[in-house]
Length: 133
Ligand SMILES: [Zn+2]
Ligand SMILES: [Zn+2]
Image 1 (tube, protein in one colour):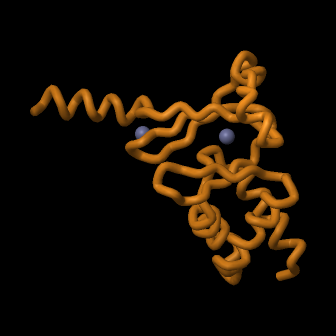
Image 2 (spheres, rainbow, N blue to C red):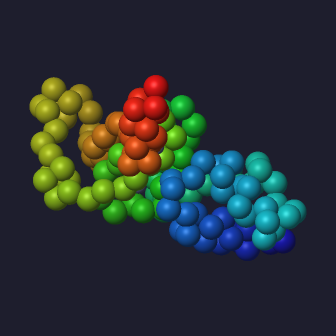
Image 3 (cartoon, rainbow, N blue to C red):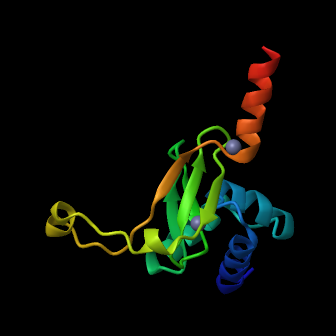
């Protein structure tokens, strides 16, 4: 399988993913279609994509690097329980001012607001656990 072909397959798989997958998640999915591909190839390709700016990386609470194919301005809700990362858009947050103390010592290239909490499913699980206890 040619390198170009692998790259395109990896990119396509990431575009279809809506859950900000980790390299491992992308690998497990793509392996079904391309059984000869290695984890190392998938991981390296994703890092290259991030480096040249066609995708973004997202740090999750567990410390595992996740990838985001959507490079337009948007923000994230992180679920502390299941690790889900959900996109949301807000014009006001896009325009948020960077404190002077930051801009003085730091060249700002992007801004993203991360809201931590529990997703719908996890908070429902918690409520039902509490009420059954
Ligand atoms: Zn959750
Ligand atoms: Zn995102």
